[in-house]
Image 1 (cartoon, rainbow, N blue to C red):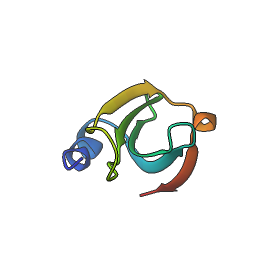
Image 2: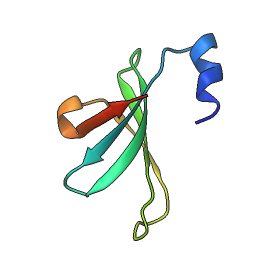
Image 3: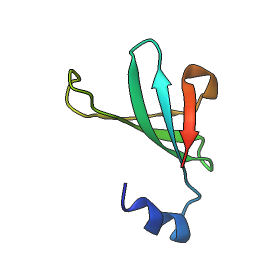
Length: 70
């Protein structure tokens, strides 16, 4: 996510937040693009988790437990 700061100034408004998926019991690091109402979700690895993956999905605040923004 180091490139995000560069894009924020040049092209897009970005927000970062962490959420928790109660169904899957996983934490996600998120990059939100409000202009497109999309979120890029990167699973935060745990000791027993599968390899990291990134999801792209339409933003839905009700779907996940919002923890904090940064």
